[in-house]
Length: 103
Image (cartoon, rainbow, N blue to C red; front, side, top):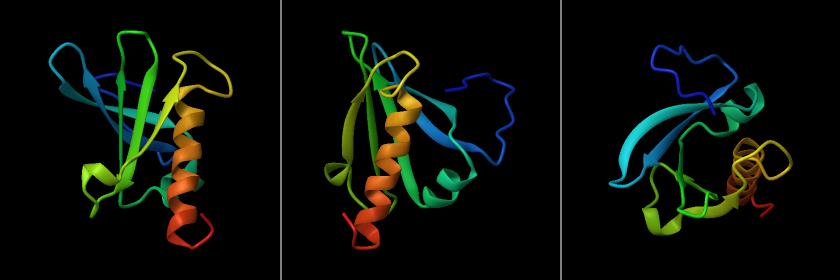
């Protein structure tokens, strides 16, 4: 995820709210996961936080849903199939598939 202060998001970037330790301060970062995922994620709220273990927790829900309805998945803070960006793609697909009745 990209976290530069002057970064201008592209059509390939999904906005993610990152919660920072130790007090949960919020920062907006961008996940470059592709135009298709940007389209699917419209009206979704995506967020992430790093645990003390170093693992990343990714959360996603529709903007009209309460936090209690979020989908949650753990990611590894490294490149690969379980990277935060790949996990985010999977969560977007899961939430989208629920919406269209395939989940």
